[in-house]
View (cartoon, rainbow, N blue to C red):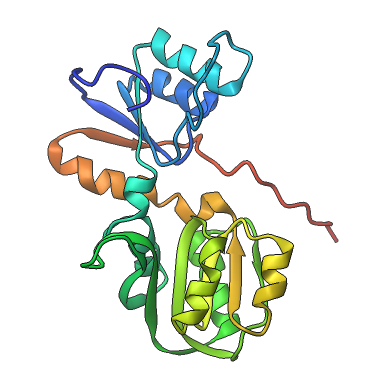
Amino acid sequence: MQVGDTGRDIQSVLLTTDITEAVVAEAIERGCQLIISHHPLLFHGLKQVCGQTPQARVVEMAIKHNIAIYSAHTSLDSVIGGINTRLADKLGIADYRILIPSNPEGTRGLGVLGKLGNLMAYSDFIARVHDTLDCTYVRYTRPRTENIQTIALCGGSGAEFIEAAIEQGADVYLTADCKYHEFQDAEGRIGLIDIDHWCSEHHAREIFKDILTPLGVACIISTNDKTPIQVWQRKN
């Protein structure tokens, strides 16, 4: 819980990946008492709430209009049924397990490792990723083999798990926010696919809706929740 009173009654909720001024304005317009986001508004403490930063302005707007803000983040990243297993389901990856388990049972932790139903051409899988997730862009390296089946993935910034994916036999590793030297190190060892961070996690909104709808809460997916990244392309 980042802003607001945990004891309030809630009738309608706005679901979003990120908390921005545009998202809060939408919550005000739609009469929502709560915003649930995947990414936290506040990663670090605010020293002033005087409108100098976007985060401070969001806090001011929310308090002024009596809107609470809750952010899930790592709690949704690290469970079966969360960000990574939903991403695997969307891409047709089955028989998966946690890539980096955090408990002995292997039911919690970061990332997923699983298999496609059949061997697939690497280029076809890249196209599937692009189309299924409506990606802003897809960056990738040459894989070890052009026909792939074992896929590892981690929504958000997961470059730190590239070596774990290789060690566990993945043909492909899908994540976001990779750096140049990480591409260089992966080349020919694993098909590293890097997509827009927002595109790798915006399905969090669907998960929130699935959880909350049976509770009788009106759930609205934000239309102002969008990636800030734009890709320039020359028009012919």
